[in-house]
Length: 461
Image (cartoon, rainbow, N blue to C red; front, side, top):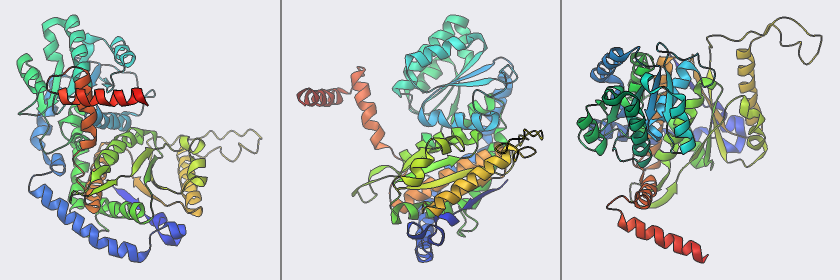
């Protein structure tokens, strides 16, 4: 298993004044060491827990035993969750089985994954109509058990399941939540659902290697031990002081410097692999929610943040690259590439006699995809647009686990370099409180009043 990071196209030697100088990188190395030490201390004192997740063999064993006990009784895994409770499972599913609609036909030996992560009624009710409740296993995921979107959808799914199978519905529901708090824990206990728990010091967007991501992965038949094995290898490397050996810290340093020294408020995650497309959306939440903050640790208002954008190569060469090449030079690009595909897609050797086609026969789609990526990187570099590349040897369980853990460590290190708390999300909470007030939840009268004031101002405008 190997993942390489190539930052050469972020340097002044290649992109001129938009790139980093050797002096800046040398000076930044000191800040990187301080970031490593600061985050290591926070993990050691138990403040943050995601680095420990790949080593939780007891939890992995329990999940595998449960998955084995229900295997063959369902052809659909229905995850009810949102944000960090859904995106990781989707990223693993896309990575290990390919994106929809090109996955193999689903069956009890190859159950599909259906994720209900939005409350659009046409989406939820359409999903229910597409599933057989007698062949569906429901996995509800919510740390607090109070997320309005998850709770409302689950109540509908629970009723749908109960109407079809009666009292046996509780045997077809598995919950992932906090062990010692929350209404989902109370409901799951009262109704006798099988439960797995999320550690209190692991936030949703960092939870893919906890029960949040591993339960649906195991139920879909993925090798969660290999996923965790890859993540464990990255964790070991992420504590090393040597930047050459610590890919996560080296990436964090380069991306922090290009962002802050060269004013690049946008980062484009640019996978050249449809299998990594789901991970780009998972990363989007990880980077945005962790690093978009109003205040720093000193309480100073900083309004810091880098907007992550997901682009797919080669698809978005034909929809976005015109902007990237000639529009505002306010972006840093990070390509995600794959060295080896299971099937390279050989182009037939038969020639047509047409010049625009006859250079391709006998070559492969994998070679063309690689050429497209390298050509795009070269073109961006030539026009002074800084870019870097992560390369995975292949897309499999071990590499996916490793890459997700690497990106989580990079995000944590970036938070240290920015002197912010990368693990809270106060900006999300206000919208949640307004929603609770609008839906009539007790205890949110203050926010009901604030919302009325907002509407009155709108009416006068």
